Image 1 (tube, rainbow, N blue to C red):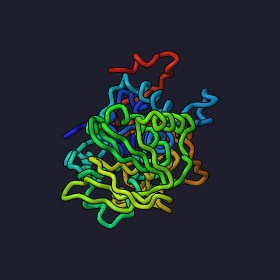
Image 2: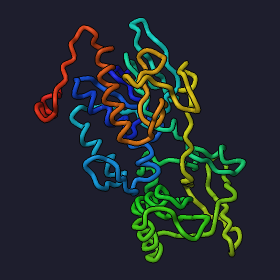
Image 3: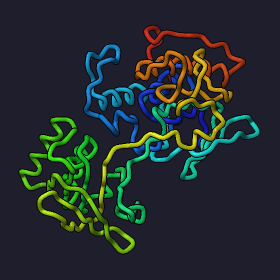
Image 4: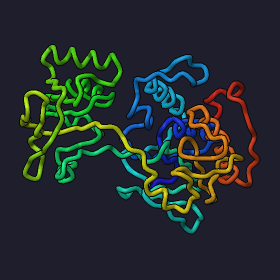
Length: 336
């Protein structure tokens, strides 16, 4: 059983910044995210896209913002459970929440902060009838451990940042990498597109455009993908792993069954402290809703700051909360 002060569901920018604000109040945090990496949409959907409305940064790449947030919270040593979805909650005899993930991990905390962005992101799956037979048996929708693919034959599908970035990364360790995309042009970052083109020109990867997977074969484990190219027709490619990156679909998931007031797939909150109708559960960032709501990262940072102040009072009702400026205390002054 993992025990913490604030259990944060969602390791996107708002969830990460919550760790910092909680750390200033000497509150411990543990984050749970269905994605295998931190950063939420910023890391998985548009890591190389610039963001222009973060105070103090005229422009910052989404992926760099995540790195900066990770560096900012490092002194407070948060815990992480990544690649697991928050599944169910219950109360124990101490009136604390016990959250269980889809893989059986349990975390105990007196406060839950839902910072799940647009919800639990699930990969868009292959529109091939027998695809589910090969999931985690050669068909992988996410890269949790790149070393798994060392010296393996890989087929990657997609035209966005994830497909391009993993093609570049995995080409360094895999024995063979083939990238297919149903169009002739890519929608990812220009520098990534150029790197992929250079790898193809140098025969370090196989690049097949105007093509898509139409079938997958194998006996218990995937070993062949049928690809249909616009002019060449069908071809069979022998692989060890097939990695389709078709983007993510946001879903509220099991959170919708926790007794929270929900409007149009968003959680209703009180703007006093972003608490929900369930005492001890808060919701911040894109996943909440209230009059005048703006789905901006900087608004989520503000919500996280006020939420943590309220959470402290709930966790330590006997202690007086003394607000201190970081310009006076620094960060080290707040650490344990």
